[in-house]
Structure formats: structure tokens, C-alpha cells
Image (cartoon, rainbow, N blue to C red; front, side, top):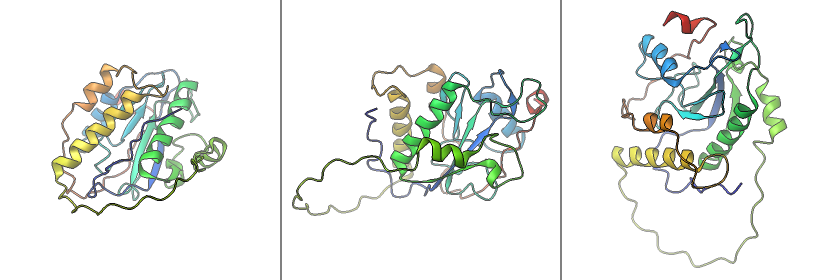
Length: 239
């Protein structure tokens, strides 16, 4: 797939990102859950937004959550430099025990999303939530999955071209909060418009547009760290 170059001009005061944590929503196999339902539960905890940066629906749709420019609330002690991805599922149909319920579409979307994040921010560490917390989440072996999908192997590089004289470096512009917000918005819209099929004419789902048009609710300079998202079986019924 010829993916777009989303690595250009990352603002210098964009928060440093070096890892990805994969989660599940701890909901029964076959049950659909929305970003808004998860957000409602997280707001009920007193947080300012959904704790995850991306949510993958059962049909493979990838929805934005908390802006990537903001520290998430998904892995206690590891939120500061990480991105949180949650797939819908993680429990058997009876909702009695943990299970890897990822649909083929979710599996494909998870690989695609992780690759795009690596393409943008560089090689990162990839963890399952259960590697840093006493939880079953995300209910599959992430280290083995990373090895099997070759996510951390470098992509082939083109033949080097002869060096060209380097131009004089321009003065470093002052990057403002507004500049960062604009970059985040452009990056989200590019990645979702491009989609998984490698074409730039993919229609953007209305659900995605609604999420992208939500205002950024907390400024970047609020350097905070919230607790990890406490999804447990039955949490949805409590809302």
C-alpha cells in the first residue's frame, strides 16, 4: 500500500510519543459499543474525555478518541509518552471470561493503524495493557502478535540518491498552541481520509467527522496523568 507521508512538519512542541498500548473494551463478543458510550463512562469517572486515542469497532472502523496531542488515560504509569488503542470486544458471548474476539476487520485495522502511527512518529514499543497491569486486557498475546505481523521491522528503503548541496537553514519559527492543534487536526483528517485501501478518495465516515469536529477540551500544557481505564465486564450496564 502506498501510504501518504504523514511525517512532515510535526510541531516541535508536540508531546513526545514512544509507545503504543493496546486495550479491549471488555464487552461481550458480538456486541457493538461506541466511542460515545466509552466516553460517557470515562467522564463518569471524573476524567475530561475518553481515555483512549483510537477505538476500533467490530466492523473495522477506526474512530478517533482523545486527541493524540493530549496525554491519555489508559495505562497507569505509562500514559505520558504513549498512545492508547482500544478494540471493541474482549469477552466471550456469555460475558463470563476474557477472550480474543477481534474480528478479521479489527485485526486488519489494528495492523494498519499501528503501522501508520509508526510511519508518523517513528519506531515505538508496542504493549498489551496486561504487560503493565494485572488485567486480561487486551485478551491476546501482544508480543507474539508484534512478531508475527513484523510491525517493528523496517520497511524497504529506496536506493540512495546523490547528495545535493544543503540549503541554508531558515530561522526556526515559533510554534504556538494553535499551530499544534492545526497539525493534529490535519493529521487526523489525512489518515482517516486515506483509509486502509491506499487511495486518497476514501469517503470519511460521518462518525469520524463528528469526533474530529469535537473541540480540544484541554490545552497541551496541562501535563497530567490519569488512571488507566477501568473497563470490567458489565461496565456498560452501569451507565
